[in-house]
Amino acid sequence: MAETFADENLAVMASECVRDVFDSYNAEFRDIARRASTRFEQKDWKAIQSDVRERLDLYEQALSRVEDQLAPLLENRMRDKPLWMEIKQQFPQLFVNRHDFDLAETFFNSITRKIFYTVGIDRDIEYFHLEDRRQRPPEEKPVFQRYSRVSDTASLIRTILAERHCGVSFEDLDRDAALVAQEIDLYLWPLVGYRDYDAIDVIRPLFYRNKVAYIIGRIVADSRYVPLILPLYHGERGIYVDTVLLQEAEASRVFSFAHSYFQVVVDRHDALINFLKSILPEKHVAELYTSIGYTKHGKTEYYRDLHRFVHLSKEQFVIAPGREGAVMIVFTMPDYDYVLKIIKDTPCFLRTPDETPKTISKAEVKHRYSMVCHRDRVGRMVDTQEFENLRFKRKRFSEELLEEFRVAASDAVSVLGDNVVVHHVYVQRRVMPLLMYLQQEKDPEQVRRVLIDFGYFLKDLAAAGIFPSDLFNIWNYGVTRRGRVVLYDYDDVMPLERIHFRIKPEPQNEFEEMEPESDWIVAMPDDYFLDEMERYSGLPPALRGVFKSVHGDLYTLDFWSDMQRRIKEGEIVDITPYDRTKSFRYRW
Image 1 (cartoon, one colour):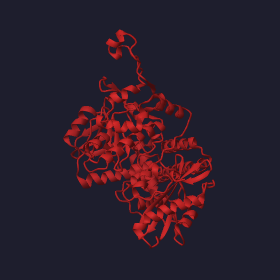
Image 2 (cartoon, helix red, strand yellow):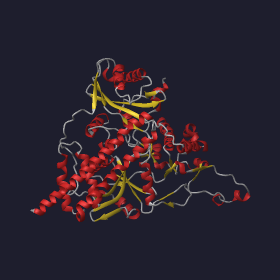
Image 3 (tube, helix red, strand yellow):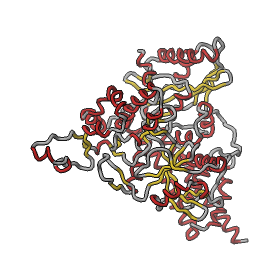
Image 4 (cartoon, one colour):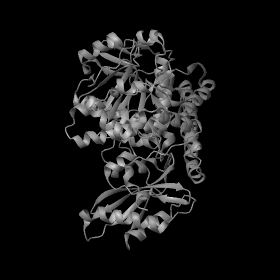
């Protein structure tokens, strides 16, 4: 009995240690998010990006702190599984009447997986709920403020704006309120006609990302919710509202999985998620958690969704549609919204179709994925979640995929009897490869729109300091269900500042004219010849004219040199996460 009591006492102390570090991590997380308002007020855009990177690294730092603090407490029992089973029993007692128990359980699971190198799920020392129906304490104060309709829309919007002034005066508050109001009234006309809508609910804090602060709300009309998103910019003469977004598709784009995460401070993350789900019903909960910076709990929610899908659908994993990659094996299930990507045993890539494949180390592939994660993804680079040691039933994999694993990825995948263990995998939202989209889309105007967006996509990447060195290999790019071009393969990306853009020299003598170019043109690994772009463009020849008519500057040395200069000087280029033509600035 004395030994049992000692173990229980030790488990309580270990649980308290985990809780204290979790609380410390949450406080640091909130402190960083809280800085965003001051950064926006001071137009300190570089500091905002620095804060985003700092917040991304907090979680792993917290896990390391737990290990360091538990080591002297547990001594030689650090990997004593029965003790950890007791710690797991004690831990929830510390979160009675707390709303953040779900985040705490994710944190606990991260610790046990780090210590035990868990394969699959170990329910003895991990929390796993397919459906979490536990009751949370009631909110002391709603996450949103309700503004009832008592007069005209312009007056209501003016009140909402005035109460969220960001510490800086508005450039013209009445003008912005009138512009927003007229768009709301017009949009609601087919829904409510002469009848008034009921109210507007607005999240109390602002959402900050890059150079924009967002007011996020919803219009309550006829028992339905209409999204209300107001992007605020800090201009030369103060704050101004750039536009109003009212459609679910527009709101979804602002919360896209291709954007970096918001900085927002709320007391109840669960209430915030519920509010966002009310205006974005098609968004996965995992994506919503990730969008506000809770990336690890986003992984937990994703894994729950994957677990449910595998067992309910009975579908098999198969090789994803599209061209086979030289670096990754990409697989999915026919009706699943995500793809899984594992690095091949000997990854390689081609710069041009007539080159010999060049190997790239697995460490370098992982470094490039991490680099993208820590950069501003400007709405153009698909969010990537990294998992280790996932276990599935063998029968859930097609024989063709298992053979591909055996031939090309035996280091990353083990088949152990009736189970398949995936040791390292990246997970991304599924998009249609750009070339497949261009081949299948029958509406020429839709093709034109995507082609033009492809050019803006390349310019947005350049503005973020990202260069896909296989620039026109359009199998690396995809089209979302909203018709937006995004990048999903990061094994070929490099910092823009590292690239040496060149124009291929002319032959200077008869020997050079007669011999292959490789015999007399000296090229370094980071050299990029712009005059080769047309020759090796993956765009179908019939579509290149439309693309080049709008984005011909992409073929010039001036464009890329200017972008490199701006990145070197530290300029933060403004990336608009919605249709540029919706900006009120066009009306002023």
